[in-house]
Amino acid sequence: MSITKDTTIADIVSKDYKTSEVFSKYKIDFCCHWHIPLGKACLDNNISFENIVKEIDDLKNLPSSNSLDLTTWPLSLIIDFVEKKHHSYIDDMTPHILMYLEKIAKVHWENHKELLEVFEIFKKSSIALNPHMREEENKLFPIIKAIEAKTASKEDILLVPSLIKQKVKEHDIEWENYRRLLEITNHYEVPADWCNTYKVAYDMLHEFHEDLLFHIHIENNILFPKVLKMIWE
Image (cartoon, rainbow, N blue to C red; front, side, top):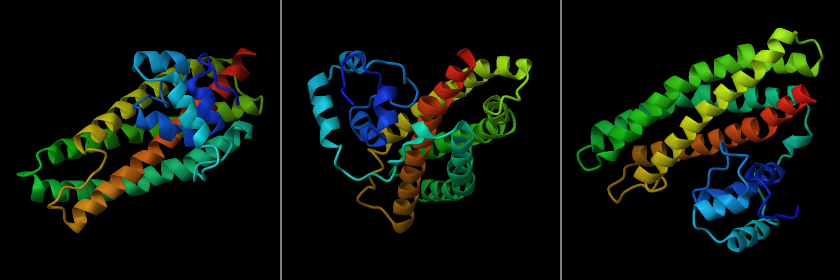
């Protein structure tokens, strides 16, 4: 893929999710502002376009756990992947992470006041993610599958753009939560006085957000654009 200043971030990340590492490094939103051309993103963040392109090229031969090309998958298969891999992961891991974060906050808060905010951000996020996922599973995703099967009603089809717009807005909030957590945890770095629980909590939180960003990327950059293209054609 030849990258120009007009190439959107979504096009780059959709073709190879490994490139998200470069965007994360420079704190460029690759999940929610998927429509932004790379040239504009570099200009807005005062970053060299040439340097970013070089770093992206350097990643091409590196292995990645998220190297699946979902752009070629049918909509129903992408949805099943999101539900079974990412939604299930969030449901399973959230109570454990909350427990660990609450525990270390109670023990270490006097020396690490940021832990109180870390706990509150994740708690608020967990409360928001549950209805977000349930609405996708019970309303948006069934309509998308029906659109693919050409059995969706006109009324349901008309609901899709507004539903997607709302989901993207909610994704934006999670992206901001993630950026704030990176800032106050210094990229999940455990302090000198860490205990095993502290490290486990941060490792779990880090893994959780890596999975969440990949999850958001799939929906914002692959699933939703494919659905909207199908509706508008």
